[in-house]
Length: 231
Image (cartoon, rainbow, N blue to C red; front, side, top):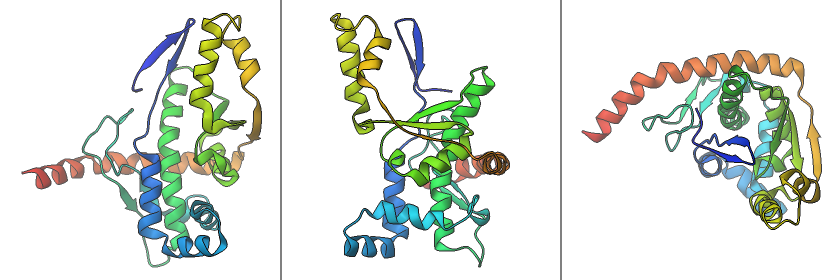
């Protein structure tokens, strides 16, 4: 259920992936967030900060709205090039904030699908390291912790995690560090740790079951839509 793996100094590292998270958030911004964009421009802040603040006003589970974040199909454990994005559970009481929270939750529930599969394979996952755009928001880090049931850790300068990893490998290769673990001690410093809320995680376990059932129910419709559009 992963897109590949590589062995480094006897340790296997898997690379599960979700397609186009950034593009999905950009689609949400473009199609749903004209008001947040206007306000962010006036205040000189990031529009995504305003989006996350709006999403926080909706409760866990977005008042019953679910989102399949497959706007560019999906790889990883789905391995289905015919998937599409889906909003489910809309009603007259659904709010703009519910849609935004469901969008973010859908991305994180897809991440949780990987975590669950690793755990089912016998791996113990208590801590997840987060980096990149989503990890900058404490609100999203809390959602991530609650959904996965794991502590979410961020590192200093996490936006540069890729180059940092390359530097660690290079230092080890030329003998500046005895091994990758010594290089890690030199380069990596923890910045934050977010603890999961057990009650919220219990709610998300039930939400995940419904979210997964939603995907399974859509598979024949994805097939029919693909055939309709390509024939």
